[in-house]
Length: 246
Length: 345
Image 1 (tube, each protein chain N blue to C red):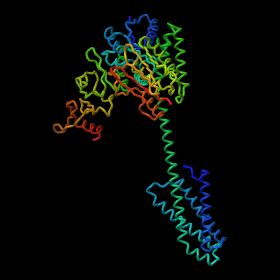
Image 2 (image 1 turned 180 degrees about the horizontal axis):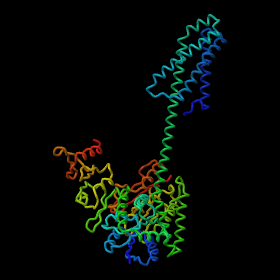
Image 3 (image 1 turned 45 degrees about the vertical axis):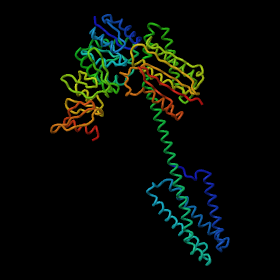
Image 4 (image 1 turned 60 degrees about the vertical axis):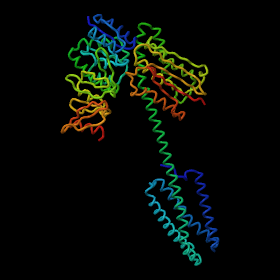
């Protein structure tokens, strides 16, 4: 038996997936969830083989939820209309179901899933999340996990980002949060006019900078409103000057 | 291309009358200086006829070539040159026709400076009036273009804003109907009816039309009923309608984007039960409508804007009433309130 979880905020949308699943007796529905928070808990608890995941959901969307899962299971996305999501699917060869869909279309998606190699699924999913984070909606915030809690950080509240091995430390008023991403990821997804890579290991929110002081011979240091100091390399200083219009 | 002032009948009549007055005036003055009536008439006809041609030339030229303010010195020189040309040609013609009379020739030779001054004054006046006229025309045209562009941009913006919600709403509703067909066909049928009525309403209604509050609320109800099917028990609506407000009037589809906004933040972006309140009252002959929805300050940061539809509502109210204080929003303790005031005429 393969374990299946449905995550969708509309109960009728869940019930239609449930109905179509009856034709596949080897797929066992272990839980239905109405938002990403419940979804995350259910995934941890059941470790499912397949997810039916809606994109637009309250508080955190389907992509943001998936980013927080350490080893994402296979996913069949279900969505009504979302330009950016569709682009992300096409770019990463991910199958998806456009609502409303019928049993035939559903069966095809399930068959395709059965035939897929698990390794390629994982790769595609990672690529998908990377593409999805380019959407204007997701550029405005960063979703992180803080113990068992989920925290949504508006990018305006971020002071600076710091590389820390495989993670990135996101420094805010309340301290820092860790996110399992690369500095390059953030450099590409965050707004270039707001965030500048000041140093190989630092990305700084320019709105937080109060002054830039010289530091040792060739380098500088950016002093933030909070008092924190962020290293600025020589090339980083050039980029900062450009954005600040100096 | 701006219209010539002579394309308007009233101005053409004024122009002709002025010219006739000038003609007669010149005849009388010349006769007063001792010319016979006949000679005076011929002199006046020739000089003023040529002057008329010069004026029309100026009027016509400025239509195609309007000088910028720094080029006024050119215009002055053109006036001087034109007057000189006029004087030379007029003198030649007058010499040709009336030159035989030595008394007349004497007068002609002595009147060069006065003829020049009068002609220069007239040509100068016509030039100035033309420049003013064409500048005004150009300004009007610019203004028209600006309003047109604004209107186009506004329509496009409204269309785009509507598109953001409609496809999502439409496909999700169809998906709900799809689910209901299997389990509860009667409800599916009802929802198809509601969805059709709602869509027909969006298509039919002209945004320039005014409707009664009752009509607008009936239409909103359709929308809310559909959302209730989609979200089941999660959505409750409470309405408190002041009886005095039922027949008060408001622009069609004004409340729709406000309600969509309330649903977007209150229902799509929260978990758990949602209560949307709609309260109306009459105050100093204004219709006041309050729409309240819960929201989550953590996920819907105020920096992201107070909703995509409200901006267009505010703009619409401004265009209709030339007031920017008719739409207010307040956010307090997880409740977002939108207040609209509609002055009744």
